[in-house]
Length: 396
Figure: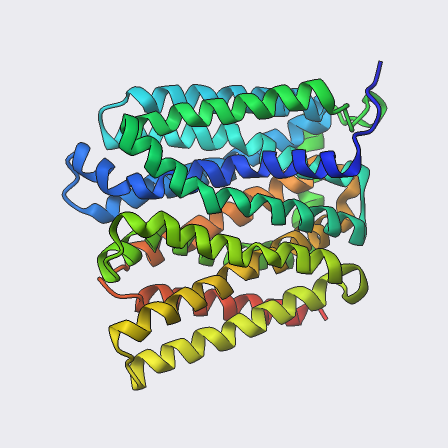
């Protein structure tokens, strides 16, 4: 017997929790990167950033499988299996003794957590479309921002109390909560009569339909540059705050403040997107951040501020940079998914996988370019913002 539909607020909160698996798995590791580098004897501290990017890369690759599988067998079984695989990867990471094995375990975690990330997006598309889908995504993203705000603080607290490996056990607990909530409360949104058999021919046909849509490819490219900028920031954040500005153990507090201030973007988007439209919201956000990036770089190059002024400037810029995902990612996903409702699982898989993997490829050189200053991060962010804006203008 099918479960009745969840109340709107509970459904959106559940979606936010599923999305938050990735944020928690990423951001709570940031304070631990120096400890990981020391504990595993890394000769180059920048290599510890791969603990973040290997996880994100796994989420990208995993989406290619979890989305189509959910079209064939339903949304809930795939999310459940993904969360169990994620927990297995966490238990492996808890025990490993080398960077290589840690990266492998993180990659496995990413593959597992790709299920809640991708399939919940398809679940939203099963129930909503157009601007209402964008509204659901915007509210979910606004709630989701609370996780990046507290994740570094939680990661640091767990690390200081029990060691950095124990962070992975907290992932297991968080995933268990989501797993139980999903299976007890949420009904299946993709009934048997709408499922597509998992055949190679069907897989290829659906993939071809997604990859031959110019509009879908354009929005995927925009998402890739958006993710590249965000992942580049996350990869460099701990080193920028600690090595450049010397904030030490206060880094999670500053990161939490940035996330909380920028969290209003989701509510702003939810309030305005139905009236103004998804394209206008995203285009405006990319235009504003591009101007801010260029202004900040100009100040650094031609009017170098004192250290007392530079840090507050960086914090203001960081808040603006984190506002962009809340004003763009939900809209871009909804725009890309709009013509693909009949193959929502496959579409969300390809869109999520390719945009995430290309985003990681863009972010890795941004993170590894860290040279003790904030300039490489700003330049990388500017390039991504410019590319996103130019591509948005082509959708006219």
